[in-house]
Image: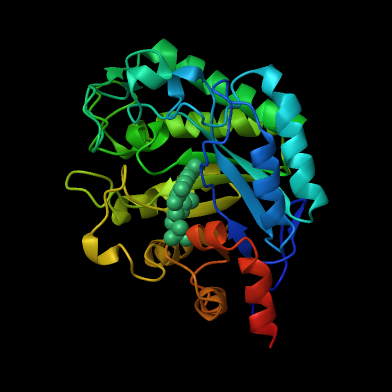
Length: 331
Ligand SMILES: Cc1cc2nc3c(=O)[nH]c(=O)nc-3n(C[C@H](O)[C@H](O)[C@H](O)COP(=O)(O)O)c2cc1C
């Protein structure tokens, strides 16, 4: 029987337990996207208190894909020095590290990203009123290269793994979703076409890292939105992500916060999504959503609903959550 405190090996990466700090944006950066002392202190506190895998918050791969003014960036080589300090801090505190690569697409505003927000189609995401400009094919190709360059920087900085953000209504999620993607070219329409850009990104990142380097994909397995991506289709897509080179699926949901009200505060609100995806893939799956109780977290692993458990807001509130949880379970 596997439990929360057990190790997990994925290729060359050995996690000391199954507790994950999911990406949690802090807006601690300078306006140029640099790592600051606040980042080092914040991640050090959680990594030193027994989190197995720390996934550093969403980091933009090009300035046009920036969502907030003080968001962390990974869009130019000048940022590698600070990112190296961050990866070193997490490693020397005893945890493994990943960094999340992202592009906001339509989920930003001109005042932040410096241009008209872009997306698959001219359809605003929920909660935003600026109409995005549909990306041209050559722009999509250039963005694939930007993700690849960002992956190189992540490796140079010394992160143990990379997570590609394909959830929550960000650009890759916007392409996968039939709600936001209404293109009629090779990047829109069928499942295969809507997934073309995300799969090209995964392959480019895998090409950059070579084999044996763990790649995670944060996959929005349901938009919970009329006309959006639903779980049935997500179960078809998950094996395609693995086939393209993903080693761990981090399962979330919602498109810019869309989520049924009755799910909102339910403990483990996205665990059923993770469980359903786990049944169709042969790679480890991370479950997330409203997990605060150590016994409940442990039961998710013991009952094989997921292989890893991500604890977000509870870790923000209490940096020692993982240590205290493991102590409580040992008792
Ligand atoms: C302040 C805050 C920042 C977040 N930033 C990110 C992010 O950068 N990338 C991401 O994929 N999810 C982000 N999320 C979502 C979390 O990773 C997590 O999935 C969500 O909070 C649900 O888990 P929880 O109920 O344990 O907090 C953020 C959530 C919060 C509350």
